[in-house]
Length: 175
Image (cartoon, rainbow, N blue to C red):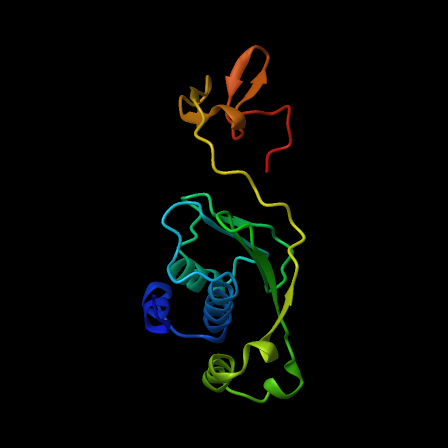
């Protein structure tokens, strides 16, 4: 299994946020009975934030946006849902932020506290609430009639008889 040092190297530095993700990933792997990270889509993580901890989750669990098994459900919470497709097991880990005494700690002290605290002090383990997404699909591509760039079919829009990308389309709200 990958280590805390591997996470720090991938992320670029050590910080409390990375430590939260590291502890969440290690705990999830333990609770789901997994000894190695996901090679394909057998393990899925739905992260409710896009903060530092997500980098540790990628390193430890093998869940990545590119493989389609790291999904963002942006609530801003430090919460992560993990699903093991093979066993059907899942778990939602919610970080328990207690800033009353911790605000007096330096970043280094807070990081060490997160790395050494018991899992029960850090996380509430809950049943997952979000539906396990289906495995990633590969779609056909089309070319935008306006800019000439290739886009996947599901993201194309039809406007005045022309296939357009979201950037070139004016009749839909662009995200």
